[in-house]
Amino acid sequence: MDGHIAGEDTWTVAGRTFRSRLIVGTGRYKDLEETGAAIEASGADIVTVAVRRVNLSDPKAPMLQDYVDPKKYTYLPNTAGCFTAREAVRTLRLAREAGGWNLVKLEVLGPAPLLYPDMQGTFEAAAELIKDGFEVMVYCADDPLAAKRLEDMGCVAIMPLGAPIGSGLGLQNPAMLSMIKENITVPFLVDAGVGTASDAAIAMELGCDAVLLNSAIAHAKNPILMAQAMKHAVAAGRLAYLAGRMPRRMGADPSSPLSGLIR
Amino acid sequence: MPSPVTLTLNGESRAFAAPADGPLSVQGLLVLLELDTRKVAVERNEEIVPRSRYAETWLTSGDSLEIVHFIGGG
Image 1: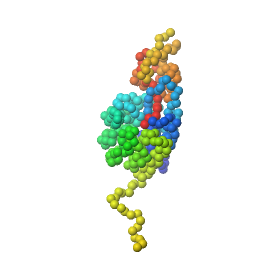
Image 2: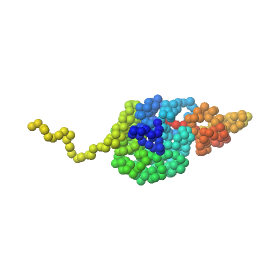
Image 3: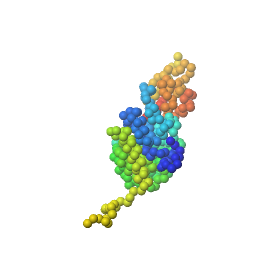
Image 4: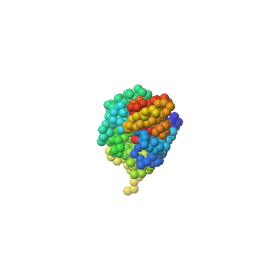
């Protein structure tokens, strides 16, 4: 699904228009059947995928494409597991050759246990990839200067973390995320840290264009149900953002009239 | 009989008999490995081999290849 849809609340990244504001990962599921079912239930249009060595001893093993149809979903290759700019660039060049897509998700990570974005490596890789014609959606720290610099370099989406990858801690930095978003004009996504549906709704209420998550669905007790929950949470959060929340006030303001009371 | 071609494939050393009619190509190797060329990408000595050039990219002993595909990831 690509191309403009009149009258609908769509979003556009690198000239491609999408209906769903939920991007889901395809990792950490029990098996490929569960992967396919959860992604279907999430309603996502874009799925992230990893690039790995083929198991040469079992060339006929089932492949992701057999369960998650690349004609139905936009594959967004990632650089998960890359700790240097060189590894990330090499991985995405292979991904482009394997899939023919130039829209990619860049992440250059620091060491475990935080896997925090390595911004120096991220800048180097982004520069190389953009020069080479890639359209880079970039995972980054919740650093307003780094985010702006990545946008100025030509990244097509800025995707800071809400909490460490796979932590499920929820958004630990909502104020900073909204301040970063104020200075960004390309699509802005929260990419890591979502643990449950309310976290995704909060990200959307902050004004994110979309949310990217994987573990929150894959590691739920029932991934298919959680995929549905995420779909609704993202839609609800988006509507709430568009609606504009009421102002907070320190004290009560009754909803029922105070006149006409019986005495 | 031509001497075997020894390659490092995804980090492991493997020897292949060269075809009788000439050198081993990337295309020939993928056929030997029973891999679907539409679902993989190949890097030879850290250079991408475009799919359109599999048949004319010849392999020699000592070459290092990475053969990758897409798997689930977040």
